[in-house]
Length: 284
Ligand code: PAF
Image (cartoon, rainbow, N blue to C red; front, side, top):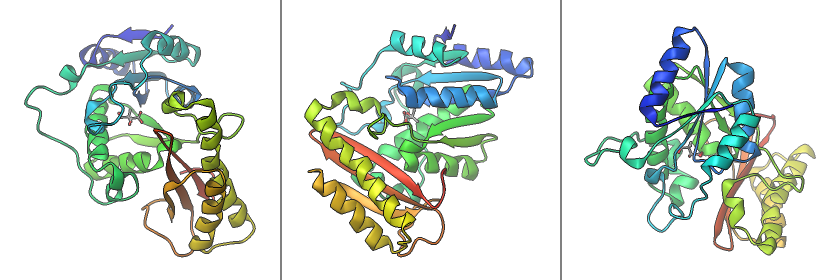
């Protein structure tokens, strides 16, 4: 059974208890609407640590006006059952009031990795993510925090924040979980109509095309991008970006000599989807 902790103060007290027992803590921050991707993070936390703690908080600070904050899917009871099935020890929720007092005015801003890709179309997004993750780390005080490679830029930024600000924890980035047809799992996939879902497959197909070209010996980033772009456009989807970047710094590449990331974002209907693949390695 997964214990439901009512708010950050209760969660912090539970963490104190675990620490007093000498238990290690694996932490999985989420916004709820959990799917197999989240559960794979919980299972990884259970493999690596004595206790797995999950947070569910739909963080208003990372949504811009006009984004889907109000209609973001929420299902706490369903989430709790799924967490129990994955062996999660405890879950806590928080309210915006608990996280952000009225006169809240302090933020965590990274200004290199966050300036590109997602940061270009969502300029305040990563400030919101880093600020809430920083606050959640203070509550959970984990030994290891788990994030999905699906949000690769987010995961790399959090790893950078942990390094730069000296948080005493490890960031583990876990592989993308996909449906059988290749669609990367995302809480936002519920927005897709059957027709849009079929078109959304062209994102993972585009990444597969880049990977096939890479496996065939292609190292020119423009050629790898072109292979991916042809595939996504054949599927009737216009990418917002489709880039080949260094897998550590997200710097643009001309040739792929080290591990690289192919990253894509596209709107399918009204739903904005992102996906990525590592070239020259399996994990980030
Ligand atoms: O990836 C998410 O679900 C969110 O960005 C996170 C890391 C939980 C912060 O709100």
